[in-house]
Length: 224
Image 1: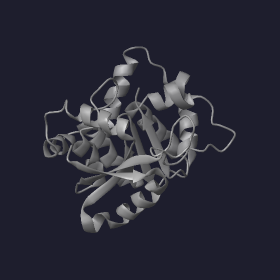
Image 2: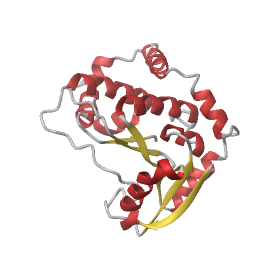
Image 3: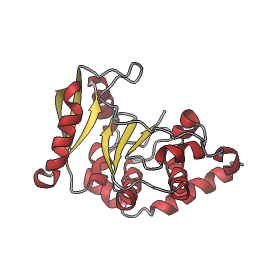
């Protein structure tokens, strides 16, 4: 990986992440949380399966039109008798909480881990991170260049920047989240085609996902 890492105390993770984020434009080192030592090892192992360097991955991502890529995923699903209506569901009555940055915590207990790792990637844009880490390309997880293409689009549209990337999780901070149901629903469908597990093994319907995205400054993705 084109990344250096620092072991830090879990209690200091958010503070240090934000401090490095505030200095990114001057240092050129883009910070992100990784998780514990096991997560770091798995991420490094997965990165080893990709032969392309970061520059080649970024170049390949620029050939991908994100909305065309999403449309192709939809066409492939429809060929297998996929029905959007069955997945749509009803808009939730309650205000849904999409959570907050969690890679420095234990997913089962919610407690902060004693130690976690902070990654520092020398990249020109936050959406380049998947290329530096060589993230993805296994099971239903998009390839590194596909991650870059989608996050390029979302960085432009929503001010979304990756704040965490482990072996199977991506977390984002979002400056300009959707503020209307219609736009949140459009984004929810985009995120579903990017990461089906957040619906199928997560919130259950597109409308519930859209409810978590409405006015939310945090996004979460996970691949089984």
